[in-house]
Image 1 (cartoon, rainbow, N blue to C red):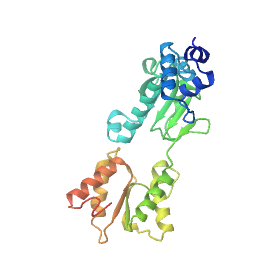
Image 2: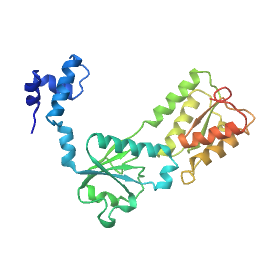
Image 3: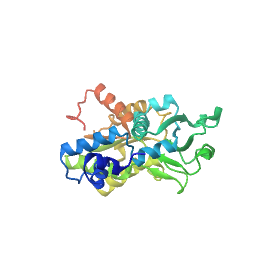
Length: 272
């Protein structure tokens, strides 16, 4: 197995320099010619970083998707999330096998070589029997884990909403509406966080107006565009018109855009 020292000896540099170049250390000051020589030497010797060698030992990772293909296509965010995970696994030389929740256990799916999983769109209330083949080797991607034994990677939706509202406010928007899913109570549920944060910020600014809140408790089987369109049509019937609209997600935003376009409003001239 090729070592850092082998590359250093061949390139005529120190092992520390080789290690820092191959690990992409941004603080390292080394000339482009020397950097190129180190990388080409490593490639010619078929050197693999410990991370890539670990990827081969891991075998494969299951991407466990809780949305069926039609639901996923209806929510571009989850398409991008899955593709991003698959791309990163490929970069790390880890074989990623995408399986649907109901496929686990059928015909040996996802297979005995799969020892870990990344879950997408899981809900705390979902049946946890699917987790058995992976033990504790599960990461929940932008969804809530059933307990603290598992790692979760999530977006801070509350802070993101507050930053969005602050930005709109600083740019002169005063009548900021919210369109999408949400119920101010039960704000611990992931789908409620955005709306709860919106209400919180608007009340702190003494600007809360219930007529500017067009929300539904039902995602309509993730037909987000249809939901956004219908709620925005209702919003535009108000006597007081919004000068900015915050959409629950990308799909809802498409519906908002269509409703504004059909009613002759321009973005961002009339509504941000």
